[in-house]
Image 1 (cartoon, one colour):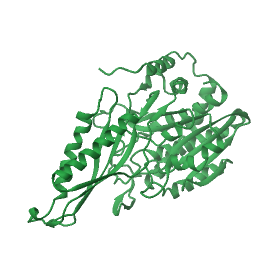
Image 2 (tube, helix red, strand yellow):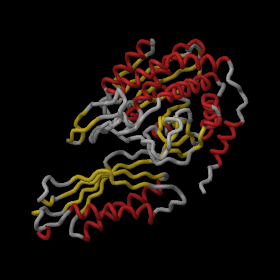
Image 3 (tube, one colour):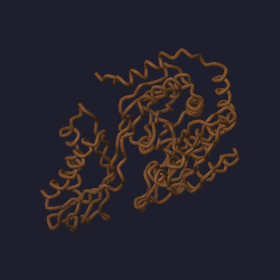
Image 4 (cartoon, one colour):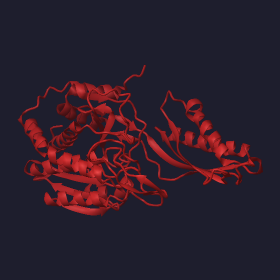
Length: 435
């Protein structure tokens, strides 16, 4: 039986203990969300139909910047390559908060039947691939554009400052490039604005539209991206004994790596994931290749666990290869992502505000989640909260709902005003001191 951690129970208690009813201010805010919703839906559909990969979000950034400039905001473009940062100055002095949305899509060929489905293709790792917003970043961008419009209308009532952060390359920059949250920070976005708090959301198919998932403390996994290069000796496919077959060795490594999590990691402390996601080798049916490339991801929840898993993966790969006369080289191909951590005190206050948006019954405490997020870098620099907004069709069987990153990933658009209202309410409550 899985128990809910004490801090989650504290947050739930805060949510359930909220007695403040939605008054006229909340009602007025809800009306503003409803008014901007058609534009949010239109933006989201447009972005969905025209997705762009990491560090290539030129069209998306241009639309975002034009909208923010039209609101009269101070706008900076070209941040971390294609990022957009806009600043809303309130009417009175007060704290600064950051609201963040990520803009990039994935190399996935869409299989949904929506009329605005993506037909975009591009070249990725020397292959022609489809491009799709299979993780919902199109919704994130549209939601934050709507939030910016509403908060701008409320400028005269707001103290402090809101920084709208439209970030590229959350899914990771192309190999050999910098990008994402790390580059945003490296270029001084937080150093310039010194935020007191950071808020972000992610749409997710594991929750139905109308629900919000949250967790104080460690929320989403840290991630490492790796490459294994298995080197054998090329030969004729009809005479395998004249060479060393790296395809067979790679298959043995894949099987052996399953023991890292199932037999070598103490899963009573934290979950862990070791996945092999790409295997590339060979060009012809009758040629055994000289090498095979394997790419994958590792997810962990502590520094000690991470070190243990990385050592085990490298040890197993090199020894399995050596046993067949081959060799295996293990290398990390990107900077590791830290665990996404929600500040417990801020999460408790945030949960109370979000309960006014969706109702206490629709606030869902979550266990730790094995997806990762480069939002984690922001949470290392300032108190931060990251939460999930459900986008599955209400009443749909969870076992049949397409996951994020699936070519069938689908967003029930009734979730869009939930996201707009959530971030707007958080900004208003935090800046006015009513959270």
